[in-house]
Image (cartoon, rainbow over all chains, first blue to last red; front, side, top):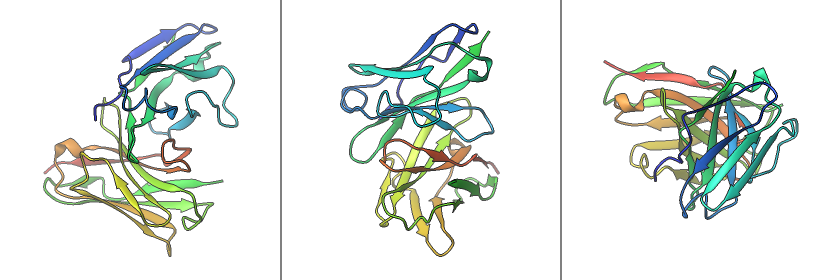
Length: 110
Length: 119
């Protein structure tokens, strides 16, 4: 199992939108609608932002949205705010009760 | 409110055993339907799923770590534990414990604990 592929970094200005991609294979992202996204501020507990590709847990702003096409999932953050600056990780179910994470993307709000 | 808190040594010598505990509050780990999970973050790299234990005691591990890892429940203390044998520098990471109700997404996490492997 190889880690899911994410861009190392993305950036955007306040108010803009950014999209973070997460590319896997036909055995993980492409096989299941079980992709989740996590926001991580170092030193804090990671926070679940999206689950089941596009569902938002209670309390997560609707500025955060998820989607999937083929073997690639995406997290879009619209109306960027300074507080969105963080690391973002994707995760996919990979079958046989195993999960696979991405390499992480550092989001910088300019 | 469910809370998880990792604890354990911050430094382990190569070839020795890494042992961490995750104390759970706000929910009994005996309560059905949850997967109690360990995940780690290598410095400058991505997250790595280590494995989980279902409330029933069934365990599931990352194939790349399966030969060295063990996860167990201690219901009397409402905590679960991670054992990783024969550690090397490659096991240096921040270790997180987390809860999952599905096995594929993780809704509550601890803050993580840094474990360094060094002589």
